[in-house]
Image 1: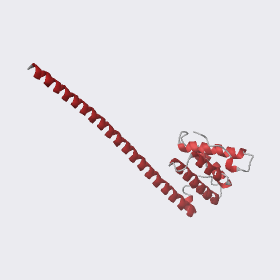
Image 2: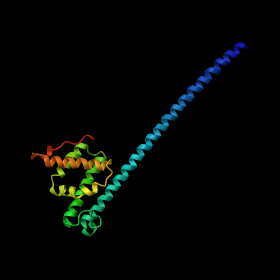
Image 3: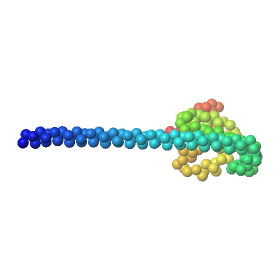
Length: 180
């Protein structure tokens, strides 16, 4: 009898060990599955955000296009000084459309910071674009200082200062994009 108890005890220990190992594997598998589900939810959320952003951009462009096509509609959302001629204010709306476009393609990761900076450097060669930037200063002042849009605005302010201070006609080499 004693021998049987020892054998049974050994089998019992082996079975208990197998159960513990199985439970450990099962727990690890559940954790991996939970982590995979969490990653998928995160990917789904990112895709939804991108889809929503793309929709918002299309709507923004549609509204701006209507305002550009119909001066009476441009008056509805015209935040610029009324002392500026209507034609120039419409040009500002168009400049803003380009600026917002550049902001969004950068935020979507379609252009790098250096590519964004190069495009802005080119756009700010236009006197009208520069005038738009100055006329919209009050709008940028209301942005949350930590927002991506405010950071881009500060980057552009620095670029404009660099362009103004440059003593070269080679505008395409003026300034260095900040690293932040």
